[in-house]
Image (cartoon, rainbow, N blue to C red; front, side, top):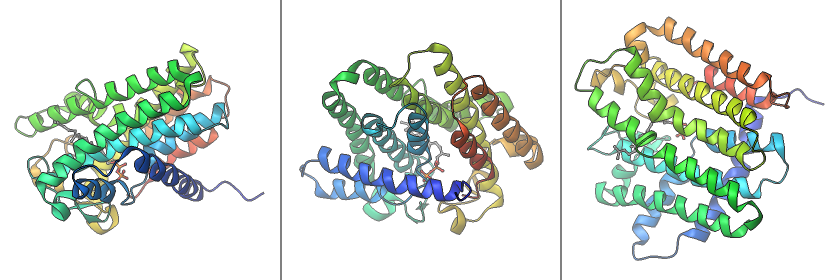
Length: 301
Ligand code: GRG
């Protein structure tokens, strides 16, 4: 048997996930009144991207079951919400970025008005996918509801949106490391946490197990954003597929801006080790999740 290769695994998972995502996108978008908005939604949703969050959901689920139909729907909803957040984050009223996933951002390609609606459209799609899945898999209705409710909670005011608002405010005032950690926790880690939690909620109601996976998600989520901050400084737009050095240009208080690159790397590495430790008591076959955690630390884009 050939040794496990994380990059091959991620590529396989991406291909599998994108097939399912295409099906759910087709099922839930009617022709509607604005084909242009639909085009913009598809443009951003199918423009590459690492698909890290849905892959985390699927990989977690596979630890418990080989039946991935129901959880795949949740993974699609999550990626739709993530894509909406990227479209809105890039808008002129927010980061005003021009490059995303190696292509012009949605508002550069379609205009601000269409891009704004495409973002809202994807959020709406995510809800439709959850409702559709709820109908398709009635035997899992209860855990499905719990997972969807966590998803929208973590995407909302007490999660990603709240973190984004705090991030915008922090650009205008001086903030310290605790505040930056808190912004990262809400803006980025909340969605990574729920990616992992959704992957186990459908298969177990054991609180200790769920908590172990939740801690894993929170820790790698925080590490992911610290690495993102480092890459923004050290990497180039052509490698990242998005505008590099933008935090510096905005004078943003990021992790490396406050403690330096070396300390940031060290802290990210520690978070990855704490994440791995959190899973060690579960006695479940979590090796691939551990590999993904290490990839989060070593990633170049
Ligand atoms: C209404 C205030 C308000 C907010 C709307 C815009 C927004 C919601 C939230 C912003 C959330 C955001 C963009 C967080 C950054 C997280 C992050 C590092 C994203 C990049 O993720 P990757 O690298 O991207 O996984 P790909 O392209 O690979 O999917």
